[in-house]
Image (cartoon, rainbow, N blue to C red; front, side, top):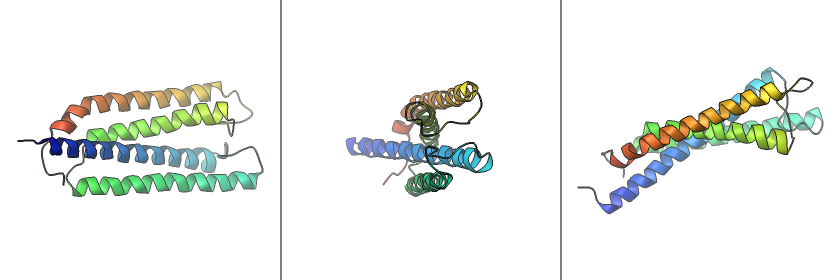
Length: 162
């Protein structure tokens, strides 16, 4: 028999699954962005409105942020596993929502509104922006779909959660 308090506990752990996935998605997307576009391809820095030195410092802070999000996600993930409360569909939904949300924010707010950097310089950025934001929206839609499909499973699954 399931009690009202166990539903509340399941809802709490469902939110933690989602938060852990979102944080991991943000950290992963930021890590890939920083590693590929900042370090390997040298297309831009996190902050390009100053000197190269300032750009490199901003990249370092951005890299630290991505690792902080990833490590926080890892602690949450480990706690969920320890409590036998991990719902992988909710976690993966969070990962897609976090990565897609980060990428969409980066492509719209940072690139177009704040203009702190562009994907590339000295080229027509429209194809890059279009690709970047289409991939972001696809991840967000995929995460939302998975989350909607997993919610009944997260509420009904049995097992210990304390």
